[in-house]
Image (cartoon, rainbow, N blue to C red; front, side, top):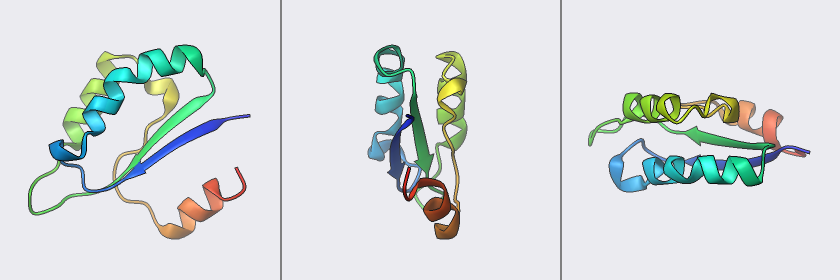
Length: 83
């Protein structure tokens, strides 16, 4: 069974998404079925989406299939409710 770690918020440094990505290699080794999802968007304070995507690529975490950006509530509900 897949395990999801779902985080949402504005894509800002202060939210700590980059820190979670740092520990994902260890988590992925322990939980290979883990899928880490980031859902968020721009804000007046900025957007670190490109930085996060680069970090995922450098750490070779594409298998965890993180999602960056906004998705609809309908998509969230249909994808994760009952998972």
